[in-house]
Picture 1 (cartoon, rainbow, N blue to C red):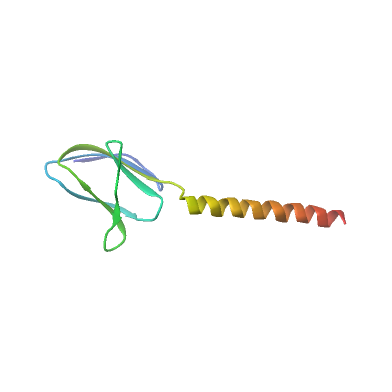
Picture 2: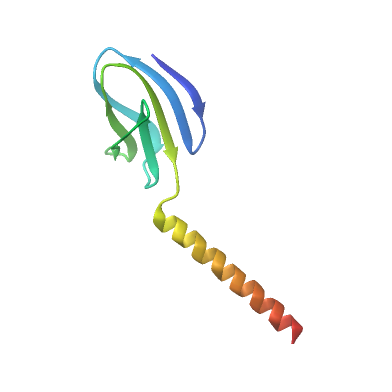
Length: 98
């Protein structure tokens, strides 16, 4: 049985009860930044043959959370973009004053 609690583009929360161990495939393309938690514990995920997120699960009842967050490289890129915009804005203001 699967009960979906919340399903957003960057967050998925559901409960699952299974009578055997196996692999769960989430119908979302794996991209660096995704993390999956089973009962609050961070687990290793991988991309299957077609790129969807896949991870193992044990028999029993579990709460699964999948979250998409920023990677360090993406954070650095965002800061560099912001810095460039500030420099351009300041340069434009100075240019208009001349």
